[in-house]
Image (tube, rainbow, N blue to C red; front, side, top):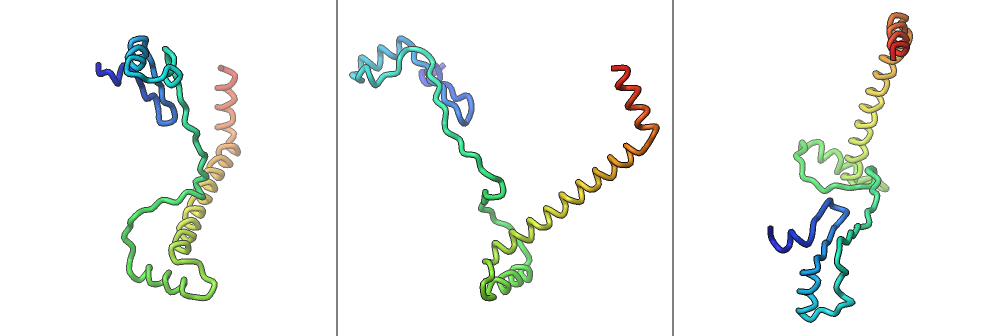
Length: 133
């Protein structure tokens, strides 16, 4: 085991654990490090502050291929007075498509739930399962 591994352990991205052994403490003191600057013997846990990021506000830089005519369409829309830049317009269209898809999925689940809840055989089977539990 290396010296570094015996004195520290990284448990996750937001936490750093530093273990100072008596041997390590004495070694640092012998090197002339001020006693007040040396952590005491034992385990020390340091936590990084985390910042919550709203997924809607997070922007990811990426490279993607898009058809030339689509790019030109959005660029020409962006050239109009008071228009948003073309990248923002593309993002807005992608978001609208995503939200439509999510709404459709939710509606499908609602339809399945309504069918099941209006099915007497299903309700009877659930009732029997609950009584047995």
